[in-house]
Amino acid sequence: MKALRLEAGALRLAEVEVPRPREGQALVRVRVAGICNTDLELVEGYMGFEGTLGHELVGEVVEGSERWRGRRVCVDINYACGVCDVCQAGGGHHCPTRTVLGILGQDGAFATHLVAPEANLFAVPDGVDDDAAVFTEPLAAAFEILEQLTLEKTTRVLVLGDGKLGLLCAMALATTGCALTLVGHHPNKLARARGIATATEIPELGYDVVVEATGSRAGLADALRVVRPRGTVVLKSTFAGTPEVDTNRIVVDEIRLLGSRCGPFDRALEALAAGAVDPRTLVDARYGLEDGVQAMTHAATRGTLKVLLDLPRD
Image (cartoon, rainbow, N blue to C red; front, side):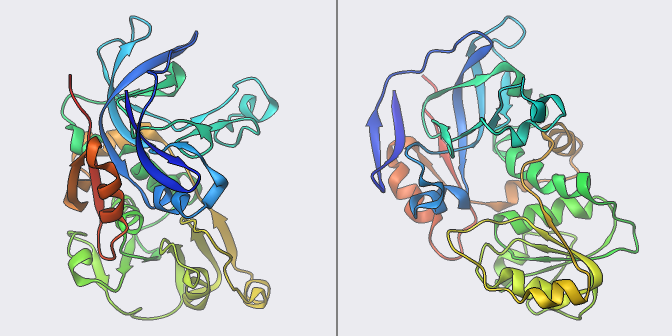
């Protein structure tokens, strides 16, 4: 099968063997995959990953138990052991021996097929098309904020960053009716956040919650500057670098820093099925897998939002 692989720091389209599912696993034929900023960071050396990239996908189960065969699915990217103390306590996303699809020790979705534990499969509702379903993983990450925090209608929330993740976070948080503002530097991107208050400059200070989704070195410092004393800064983005932060503000103003990573696939799929969120407005371009290197270059171009890969259907 064809796969877009990162090897020795270089991207290439390679011919590899179709993976064979083990007991409890399914073979998934990928239909559509999405390029994420994490994929771009991996190319820059983040995590030291080598192998097939890609962790945002919608596919169809072609081998597995009768329950799953023929069904359209999304895949939770954290492949946990299921038996350690962390997993038994419900923390599979933090299993110390986990692999992570297309990120850590596990070939990913930029290929015609992948294997996944059946425990990681989520059925895509019939009313959710592939172009919406491919956003399930990053949208679930956005909804994780609502698993960690309770937002009231009076809660003043600022999302920093008008890239893919920032826009998805704003869409997810908007479902609560909180007092939400999305700030970014690109009016054309902000226009995708339909029905959400946006600004190109931070309109005021003293927010209850600030979500840092810029993926930049300066993002955390900017968030700390505008959050109120005893407020919360949610860190959603990773990048290949080290932020420069004055920790005195965190101590003196008793600011809570909250890391936030992967989230609830079921909640994301429910929002997509209900039409509460429509991420398809973020799609800027699509390519076939054979043009995957070009697609990655396009995705890395400043101003680009989501680039999709269409996989062969034969």
